[in-house]
Image (cartoon, rainbow, N blue to C red):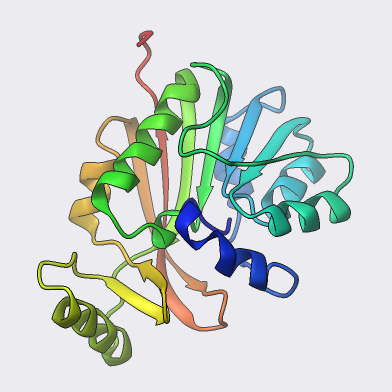
Length: 221
């Protein structure tokens, strides 16, 4: 839940004891797509909030992974009966087809580059079995003046910067996503459904969010 950007690990380690995440888990839609017996990976699990919600709903094959050792330390302390791993490499350490479902909550917003976002999504697709489910929750481009000023400043500093990137604090970069890019990025998944919804950011700000559900193709890769 915190980040897939290993470059910003120090930031997430620093805020791990205090930050709270709040993107909602749509359990009804998830249960309609993923059986209780499923093997589930929460990619960017942060302190394990969503993993714990899934376990409470009856899912037993849940594990979380995050680049921040301090986030994983907090997750293990709060939920000692769940499995958590520190992601130390850009590639997930599991073989192809290891999971029935992968969740990606507030991860893409932490990745500046198009190519790195593609790498993450492709690696998720790799570890999903055929007909495996992906569930994404993240932030759309915002429409308010404050955010547009931040986007414009990022483009001024780096001409050619993807619109929607902004610096939260020196050296800590985030990104909001436009619909065309979302459609492109997840075009390899079938049966896609995207729902827009209001969310609250980790800093307590109201924001435009989205949740996407999809499936891997039904043939082996």
